[in-house]
Length: 175
Image (cartoon, rainbow, N blue to C red; front, side, top):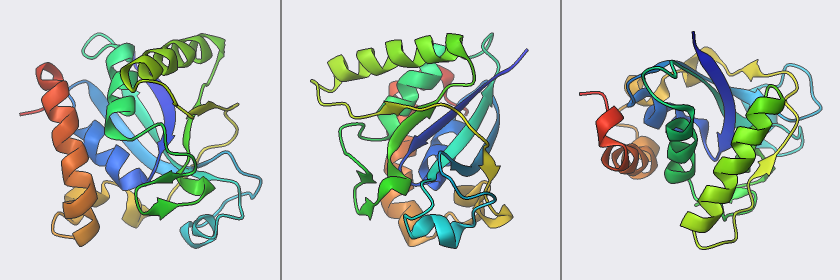
């Protein structure tokens, strides 16, 4: 049986790439959530006016990789102390947010956020928002890093995040 979490933490290309590096992750879908516009496009979300965040839907087998590892990896691959940004990516579409699908997930997310706040020395601004419709992003955004390994953003931003997650969670890293 698999579990799915919807998480936003900056550009979805980075989250997608880092999660795909972990054993037990069976699917990662980049998309948009948390806004008021139905069926948003990448161009619309980039304006910052739709209310949507770039996010990933991460499906994993908890018998292979525990939910806490998925959540701790999330707080490792982005800086949850940055409000409405990740590095040079600025705007509410890059916010740090978790979208629980039920009350049990909301509790898990709250506990993980508390652990992250302790790990980061306070100041975590990650929100826990009610999950509405998750809109998959355009096909060219899916598994973007694997399709574009030499792309400048991937080399400068995604690779360090993937390496950080692989190092911290080596026992779950794909070989």
